[in-house]
Length: 94
Image (cartoon, rainbow, N blue to C red; front, side, top):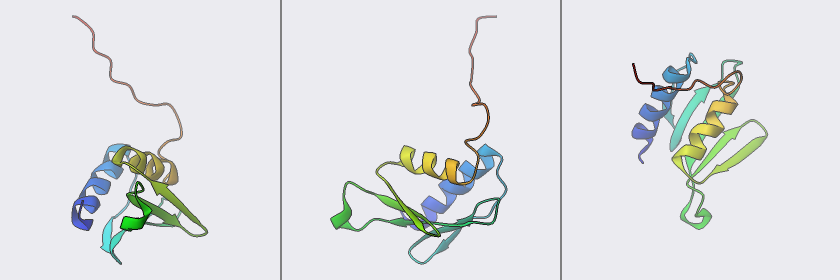
């Protein structure tokens, strides 16, 4: 996934989670800020780091992500969108 594609995915995720923010391509990855002002960065892992695909970095911390689902979960928690009750879709017969 290229940095522009990753930027678009993360921008859509922030909108879905109801988190204000701007996502930008920066330094070979994607940069954004958590609502509390913490800078976050997602960078592609080196081939030697496989099976890790991305690193999520914030000051003093670097977390590995091996899948898109793991990346989104890590970012959701980092921006505080994982707090509170999960939204669930329920399908019922009329």
